[in-house]
Length: 246
Ligand SMILES: [Zn+2]
Image (cartoon, rainbow, N blue to C red):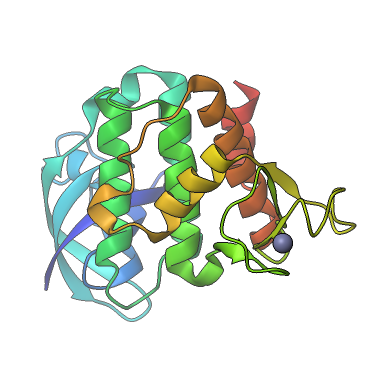
């Protein structure tokens, strides 16, 4: 079968000519595949099966993984590779997608979210911290970890001077119902931050990156999105730790 896919992981064993990859495909979600001889630079499948390449793959189902018989590059996101911080961020997006996207079932929206995010990073069209926050919150929402940002979980009020977001439960509570930080912890959300998070989680797909926010607001949004992800998933990511160390 033919499927468009983003290569989200490369595993190369020393001394082997084949390239083993994990790919996020439109039709089959996350799959593991091998490309014969693709580590040879002269092989015509070489660039199309590199990490962060978006390619059209010709796939045959093998016993425990797919075999890539042909790979045509659609976009290799060349500009992503010129800045180490941006490359690191893109690699973190790939690791997150490998955990959150479905396996062996269609993953159209996951793929589109990844491609849009990589495009904004490569073309420097959006603040990278904004791209990161949108990708984290939207992908978590798509994967079943959507926070409930509609109203205060206690009194039902929609807007307040400040709301607390619990990273554990993903619910919000207003500062009238809980004047102090709730005992289980919580992020204080200004109306701007709450509006941005609601936009990311609930708006139609094509608009999820389309909102404006101050630089300070984006920084805070990025911190909360990352913490929410870490608490919800209960694990960390090597690629994220590397990105944050730069
Ligand atoms: Zn309330």
